[in-house]
Image 1 (cartoon, one colour):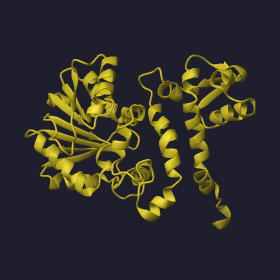
Image 2 (image 1 turned 180 degrees about the vertical axis):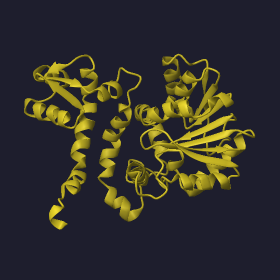
Image 3 (image 1 turned 180 degrees about the horizontal axis):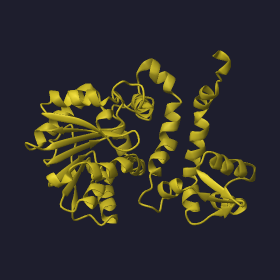
Image 4 (image 1 turned 135 degrees about the vertical axis):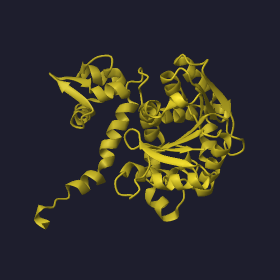
Length: 336
């Protein structure tokens, strides 16, 4: 048995940052956006994105080996996947999340050991009370953060638009809507719905610009507010996507109670996250996301579908269920 074992999996995991940083740097350099315009040979592509001669061939061929680029007859091109999701000119671009990972999370995760030993966040808000206050105070960083939230929500938003029985409802409100990926996606798929995004006032111009770009300014409105200080907007369906995991247990329960209070009888609450599987064995992304909340927040953590259903029942919701969405994300639905 021991003779058949190798450390390959251990080394692949331990050196995973090599692969991650290679992709993140490619996004930062605009490589995939450039190749979306057409394939290119090594000298031309190096010149367009500013690669040094010493680095260029190994960098591009590493991306080929990672199945993120293709190469034929000396010319490089995007894969179908990178062409769809990493071209900034396409509405399907999810690279904003990777841009944030490169600019913020990559460095903070280098301090994971300290976070594990102290229980304290390790990001730019380490000595501040609120990560979001720090982010929202800087317009450029705010815009980058909101674009990242669109990236992380893209697949889940499309799945929610398809899987939830929207024909039974007339209105919805997305709490902590960020740039507006979820409300725009749902409104585009279901013309009978009126939608709203609820977030801090600083988000308004970015949300409205995003809605206008998608031709939905008239059907999706922005509602400014603070979900801790203000009541939640009333709607038939309230959505919280990648929101609850930012906060500690008491804050999670308070937000669920606010959602219950804002809904009419028969209304629905949708919570979607990278839910940890109930046995806490399979969804590594959900568990790693919870470690990311350790690094990013004062008290946030991710949770299982069973955890969330229990909290919802404590808030007096009568029916709950869990449904998978896309990738590591699932939604928990509760009915008032």
